[in-house]
Length: 385
Image 1 (cartoon, rainbow, N blue to C red):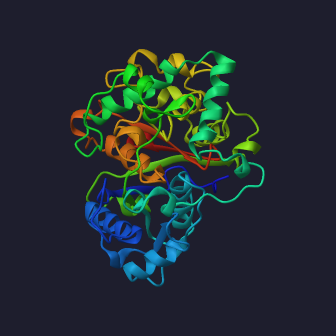
Image 2 (cartoon, rainbow, N blue to C red):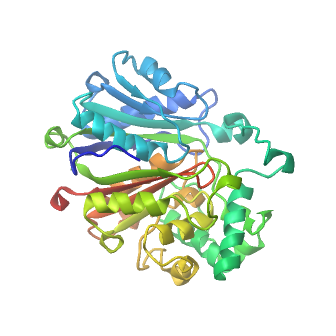
């Protein structure tokens, strides 16, 4: 579980993406982290001289925290490099808040970078040999998520059309985002007729493969009052792990989001109906359906119906993945930090054409491994404290 800290003890004051899509030749993941960190510090009016906490992870560096600290010339910084896949950065957020609250550091940066599109996904992240799964030659990670999707279809009657609705909604949001990779409209039929990757998931049910990264800056609630942008506070955070390999997942249609979501919402003193913006790790379309159920936005088995008829698209009843998500905006491997950046941007009212009307509270949920590691964060404006 995430460390228990005081509600609203720390605030996010700076956010930024690095370059996204396909980055310049020779760029490294640490280059992208540093680029994002300097942009995020500029966003809030701080400098590298203020940084004394560094939280980082990437599959392309064995010791990402040390590498980034050296690159930024911050040798005395408190360092945290725990890696639990794409949910790492939401876990880092909780740990950075705890570190600030304990006086371990004052200005923490959380950073990620990946060049997986430029160097190739296999070079960026090589799967470990698993004697129980590898001999069967699964196409990981997609085959693992396909198992969950197929089981959900079998148990609850979920359809491929309902899975496709998730991708279509993401694309509609992406068309409102100038930074999104995908720029062409998408229909349910387009998703269904695209190349099958691992049944029932087609290539349009799967996330993008891009370069990119991001960073956020976290300080104490008190210090946040003197900085450039309106602070966004951490109201609740929790983490839950159920397995590593998909063959050891206790239940293919129930994730650890059930536990992490309940704990984070309890810490915030809020419920699903209080959320104005929801950011869910959509590496595959089935993720969104599973997480909406497990986080309490609908009952188990009703996720397919919940996402239908544009309910999570622009103009729908619940704004989900308003940047276009990993399905249409960007997906540089470990996507969790981008969830936080968009949630904060929405709360600050900086999203232009895709801006949700007067949001006060946002939920961001990260996923790591093959539905293995789940982290939920509840964010709110000062008026929600």
